[in-house]
Length: 146
Image 1 (cartoon, rainbow, N blue to C red):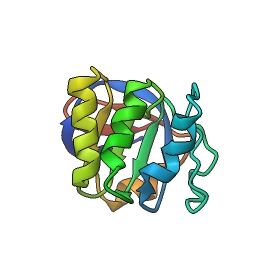
Image 2 (cartoon, rainbow, N blue to C red; image 1 turned 90 degrees about the horizontal axis):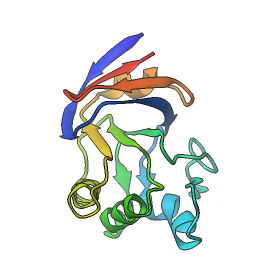
Image 3 (cartoon, one colour; image 1 turned 180 degrees about the vertical axis):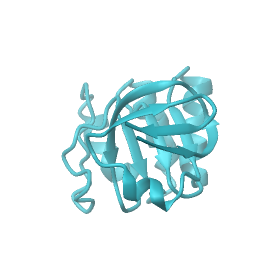
């Protein structure tokens, strides 16, 4: 068991499975195919990200350094939250980028989404957590790898 403390952007308490990307996650490439098909779950469709490609990320904690890609990133996050097929949490090792932050804030306010976002968890966080690990997230920004 190991704990990490980050900065809370959208808080909540949650326990569940981690999906880990060691590279930036392109939100459009990852979520677009599932959103356009009106799918019930998101299977990451970014073939340039072997860490998460074709993995189910709906209802999981997406552990990542940062999101990358075009300015549609925030809208894509808001859309999958509105569809209720989003990751339960976005856990960033680095500072959250403005596009992901805007999408998460809009999803919380406009879509009443319970999506959680914590950043600044550090590089050691991404080096410790593995896909399939169980995580426990606390309202204060503590993430425990069980």
